[in-house]
Image 1 (cartoon, rainbow, N blue to C red):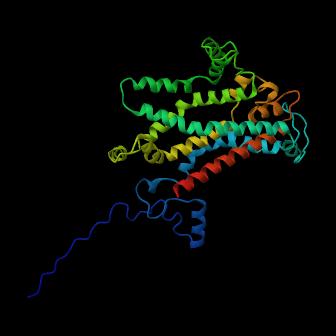
Image 2 (spheres, rainbow, N blue to C red; image 1 turned 90 degrees about the vertical axis):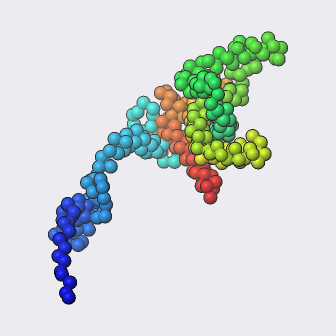
Image 3 (cartoon, rainbow, N blue to C red; image 1 turned 180 degrees about the horizontal axis):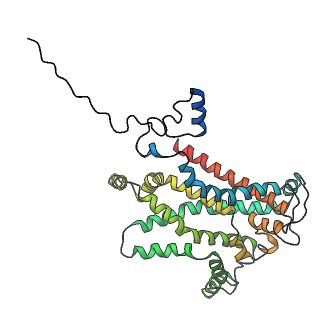
Length: 345
């Protein structure tokens, strides 16, 4: 007995199956080499792309990035390249004719004791501020992390200096640290000191006071960084360590610090770059000369003095010092990245 033949209806093709995908073959009738050349010039989505990628043009992401690229080029790349070019000339701050002097500005810079003094001050600033700025905001974030009654007030209070203008903060610290200021007056009335401490006239005290101002103004900003990082540290680890008898100090070094290590590296890098670029604090506390005899000038302060003075300034020499500051900042950033990779390994 023969089995009846069952005729199956053909399965209809999915809609658009016969249509050419936008990125599959831009010129289906062209030879292979020409097709590959056309695809190289006008790339599109791959043949196995799906969803919205099928209808996305290759130039669309670049279109959205164009404003940022133009802004970075006009305000970042071009000024940097122009500074490098000017560093090989004897250009004046107000423009005019100039001559190409080659490496003369760099030779002058390496033999200039004022340049090395400014470099020393900038490095001391970074060596003092960076470790404290990495650790103190973390401790502050741990204190305000807990949900206690009124903790929002303290978070706002710690963050308030970040919102204040640097000039206003500098004027406030001038009033606090002057010979007749609040600090000296209180210390004298408490019979702790007999004479006023020269916070604003001694070169070392000016530098230390400026560092304190930088720390005070930046604590709240980096506290926010650490608050976000602490939220990613599992509470179960602290609870398990506490059950095992680990104290607060051991939990801090073995759980909290490893959990926020990436944020610590980020804070250290940002603080180091900012310390090398410090200007306002020195200007507000040390005056227009940068301390007595310019002893507290940092590299940005020195660049202003030698490169931007309309009468005696040399824009070419100032540009050379700016390139040196960029190299120093780049070296610090690369060192931080190297340390980060070693910690991850």
